[in-house]
Image (cartoon, rainbow, N blue to C red; front, side, top):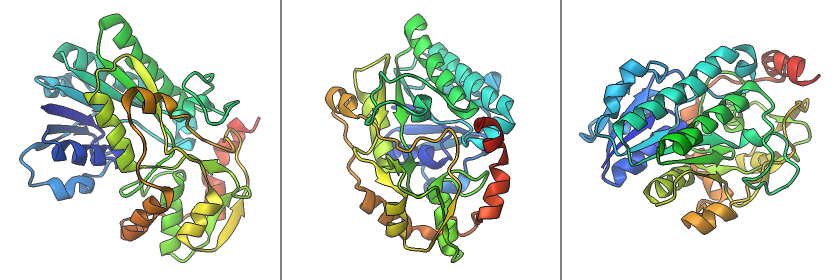
Amino acid sequence: MISIVTGGCGFIGSHMVDRLLAEGHTVKVIDNWTTGRPENLAHQKDNPKLTIYHMDIRNKEEIEPVFEGTDYVFHFAALADIVPSIQRPWDYYSSNVLGTYNVVECAKNAGIKKLVYAASSSCYGIPDEYPTKETAEIRPQYPYALTKRLGEETVLHWGQVYGLPVVTLRLFNVYGTRSRTSGTYGAVFGVFLAQKLAGKPFTVVGDGTQTRDFTYVTDIADAFYTAAMSDVVQDTFNVGSGGTYSVNRLCELLGGEITHIPKRPGEPDCTFADTSKIEKELGWKAKVSFEEGVGKVLDNIDYWREAPVWTPDSIGEATEDWFKYLGR
């Protein structure tokens, strides 16, 4: 079997590549290295079943030949983070929406067996119910969430109109080894781990009682593989851990001092996936406990040694536009 992983040098994508190679797939990675790092796949560099194409999904003519003869497509390539999506919305539209259009067009033309899209639970915004079902109202709060949702709609529409076999998975707060280490202030694990290495306090938003459905990255890869190999098409599933954990609990597990920074507009107090649908229809359930996952991250903490170390002042500067546009 031959699979493409877009964004395969990135955090989740590189773990997907590992899983596919372990399952015996021949894997083609498409990544422009904007957020992905070739080093994330350095341990696979001698694997004859892996080919990395340094390409941009926004260039359809360049990527289309890679799709020839492909069975499965796992579409992770996207720009993430909230603040830069507010500052540079076109970059997000061109990558997350138009790039996704290019991927589904190439997949359709290649006659693939299944495309699985990495959708985002940010499409729910601040939901009314927890745990949150797939039927919850769609309320994106910022351009990143909107463009990931528009990408998801594009994927599902190509399934509806052209019969492209697709599944979209809405991911909740993925964490684990190889998570992003640079860029604008955002992902909590990268921020906290760099602060721990530098002996600085963890910058906790608000009082830290807010909870997140932290889901370990290998569980995410397992969900994608399960969805791809299933007979299910044209459907959407939440992917979460089965629980929700406070930021204060994360700080306890990581071990360190805390300093508090202002609560931010547009952020939910809780994210918590209702995973009953994926458990029932695909037989998938997360396996890695929060404590076990944090332990795995701490075992690999040196990965974050070169990450930026954020302080309350630098966070305040970096998130100024967040408060400016979302705090109205």
